[in-house]
Length: 444
Image (cartoon, rainbow, N blue to C red; front, side, top):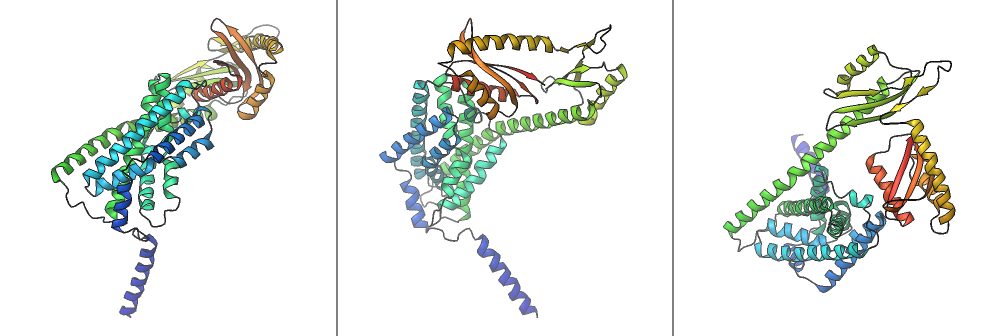
């Protein structure tokens, strides 16, 4: 009976081992070394492919086209150099590591020069949402690079390559941040240079470390002529660089998590506490840095008791320490007791509506004069279709002391964030061909 149990246990162990055997279908050590050594050689064809990939990615970023960017990532030959650096690091082959690093550095320099030149001569110099998305790396980008590098390290050592390495190239996104860095250099914007190149550094470093980890798991033999002293120095350097790279991503990630949580708490607070039959919220804002909450109301005045209760309820939504500022309308005494004047911070809704009407009148005049150049009506219709929060849109060309710009007016039911507004402006600039765009939105 005991022998039967042991055999059953052995079969189960063998069954699961066959599923998770990382050495299954692995290349021989000799084949693996030959492939990695080949990856350290600079081929002219690879450099031309890299330049074409960089140009395609830059065009995709310039036109905010995700499909084009993905195509460029599939073409890019950058991934092989990073995996080779990880392999040579794990096997203590410092000569191969140096050669792979030189090849990779040349590729990075060529990529930066190509993307910078493209964005310098491109007539479209407005940052797109695809570019902006590459400027704020967080701890999640570290994890994506880490897991992607493990997958790439495993896939790269198989006899049958499959689509693992191209998939890793897409997931970890090496090309877009490198091209965005070129955009920052061409337009002299430090935010894009530092943010995008930091993301590229994160992806490169952690793909390399993951590849080294996989190489160790595969028990690839260490290089025979390994210099122990140099090996320790290299590892110490990589450890320091890794720590310095991770810390900012953790800080940025924690900040984004905190901001998201506090915004959600604020939303819950508004939805559950600011529920009145004769009073409604017309504007709200939370300043997380200064711990300030601003709410503008229209309708019946709230009593002092209600105001005090609203302040006390802040702690129930983890908004302790926040200052609540409520702006209320002034009731008009007289025969028409339902008439109200709405105070919404510095401007009233009536003033905003008047401004919109004046701007609309100017837009109509400009539309008639410039209908042959810019179709404001079509742009307004497209804006309503593309951006779900917008409705009742009108669009036209305006002019001030700085020159012509395109103006879009409309109404929104939900608050439009500053990033969403910038995306709309970028889209307007591309659609109109003008250098500036402005929005005039009123919340219903």
